[in-house]
Length: 74
Image (cartoon, rainbow, N blue to C red; front, top):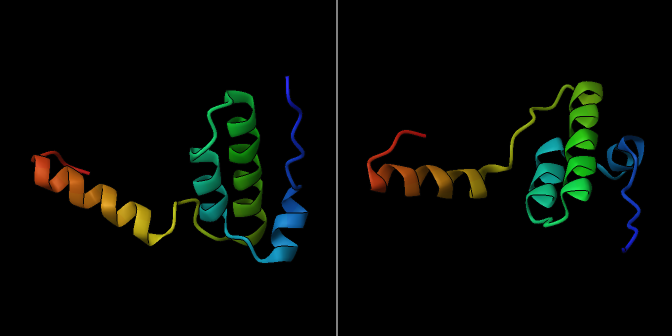
């Protein structure tokens, strides 16, 4: 089993990383425990910075476009 070090919320904030960017990183993780760590960290960053907890525009816009083409609602 591999062990990974996830930066703390304070470290992400110091780097200027948005909660949405952290969620984007989380979405690429296949390991559920690691994904959960990133999601929890993103929530803390959102609470401490007041920034929205959403994936940045491009990824979200593509999802909305795909759903609208298929006739589903985002």
